[in-house]
Image 1 (cartoon, rainbow, N blue to C red):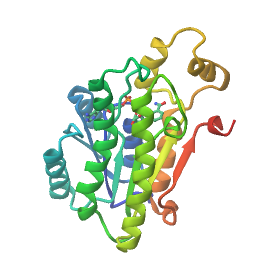
Image 2 (cartoon, rainbow, N blue to C red):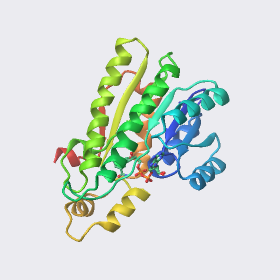
Image 3 (tube, rainbow, N blue to C red):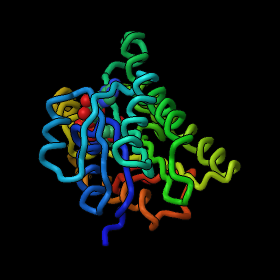
Length: 248
Ligand SMILES: NC(=O)c1ccc[n+]([C@@H]2O[C@H](COP(=O)([O-])OP(=O)(O)OC[C@H]3O[C@@H](n4cnc5c(N)ncnc54)[C@H](O)[C@@H]3O)[C@@H](O)[C@H]2O)c1
């Protein structure tokens, strides 16, 4: 018996990094998993390699496409239990140097994309207690980091929105939970690129060198916990997975 037997999960940004590992773990526990992304080659490769995984192209900023993706998921698999709003990207520049276009890109993909996903999915999610929304925030949403003002804004916004959605679902007695996960540095293509761009002596680089980074499975294990019945009494919270970074 898998912990996700009979359940259907939708993971945005699932072609790479954390989303891809979430897909592996949920599928291994018996879920049918739909991953969406804008990187079609990687998404199709993941679907070919991992049993139980299907890929759809979807830019999370596209509200009309959200409706289609959920309709296609329900059509193929009959239900929707888990939504992981994971798609994301980061652009490095402080408030004085960041282009407004790059500010908008990050907030539109992560904050607006998460809003659109929740709005589109909630009316169609299972109401039998298996409904679980998991939003990828970041420790960046709990701190001030001068190099990534749009990213921190988007992630802090996700944390606040997660609480409001959890309360809404509770008030409406939907039996859909909504939580956020706030990882610290985890080894993925996103962080590999970020680290390569960081100058010697950067505070972020020091943090990594001194305390190490997590692995995608460290986040995927929590996604599974929140998606399956193990996390059935948890909603509205933000769980840090950062080896104590935000406690120091
Ligand atoms: N890796 C970390 O250290 C870390 C830490 C905290 C939070 N996070 C968050 O975890 C999530 C996953 O990050 P990752 O490290 O796996 O990065 P990643 O770059 O490996 O994966 C992100 C995926 O999102 C996709 N994506 C980007 N824009 C999109 C769009 N408009 N529509 C659909 N998909 C889009 C990318 O194509 C990519 O496949 C992100 O939200 C990120 O902010 C990561």
